[in-house]
Image (cartoon, rainbow, N blue to C red):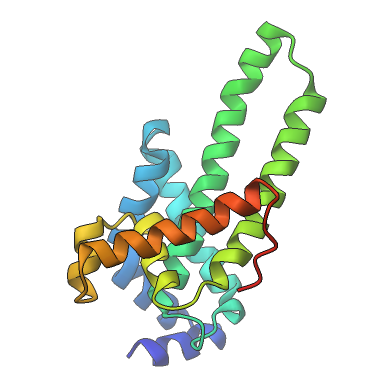
Length: 183
């Protein structure tokens, strides 16, 4: 059923969009709420709408060989919600900036560096081997508990923890400039 709906979305048939909204709306809402819920219900609802719009507009980015469709949607939701959070925090910070006379240059540099690091980190994560990549997405993008991941993939908690630890080390080394991880 899902593959049929993906094909419909690729053909810009709104039935496909209706299906993914009906299927994933609650989970996407919860994920977005965890990230920006403190900014208000309206912001969460706007972000959720934008998630489905982004999935609709960027369906060609989805590659069945690289992962499943739900992961694709949740990653879109996570990063869009984080973008919203940055924008909303920036609005709040701009008020503080005026009060503390912070320069726009410093704020802009921080945003640019943060965005560059985010894109590079996403590429590192995409190159993780399985099941590391799947565990990492479930833990840090979909906020599963370690026990839930272990149960879902029929493995031990220690195995999940070890794999996540190695993934974090790779990212930490990249951020410290000690690694040119390529997968």
